[in-house]
Image (cartoon, rainbow, N blue to C red; front, side):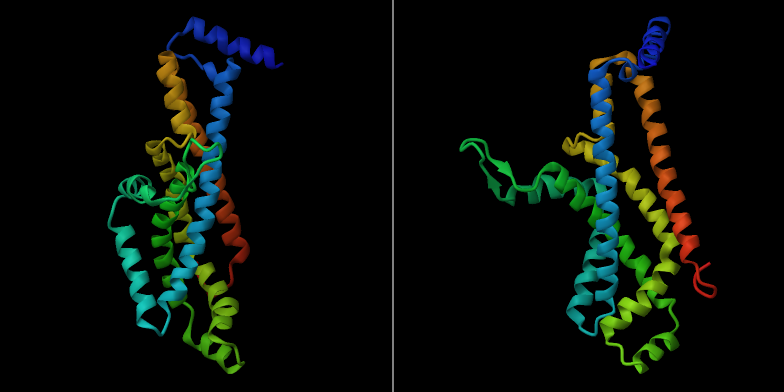
Length: 251
């Protein structure tokens, strides 16, 4: 079965040289695509989780009675919302990366503690997290004051009110906007190509540089894979939104 599959695409490349799906009949190129897909999925999952954590923590700090935490969060939001994510990525990797501690496993080669993959996750997560802070802040403000007062009357602490009352309700209200931001985040992971993270775009470009006849197939593969990844994310978020829906909160 696999041999027939490979023979079909090998014959297709011979009949139509501009449509050489080499990654479907060459095991070496197939491994490069699978490696890139693995990095893309890993980047997407890590950035989604970390950006949501940053959003929740930032929204919590915005509600602080202390001025300094609020100013820190506001400065963070303005910095990451008003500068391009590509510039942020380069700044984190090339500027902050110069101050990263290194270790030497063999006594000669100096390896940074934070790799290019780590900087990509940090940069993209902080970028998306700035928008998530505002999304969760809007969700928190949508929770009726009477609900908070009822929790206070029951003896909840401020942290307890946020954790058990405000955040679950705010999360439901925030899900539609959060969905849009996370979709954009998954698409933005392609920018990790600029710092040589071997994700899917990087591997596809490497393949068509080595085999120019694979240009169109590689571009087509990129489109299909990202449509599937985003589709899975959107489907999951919509199911989650439907499961968490409470009449009177959100849409």
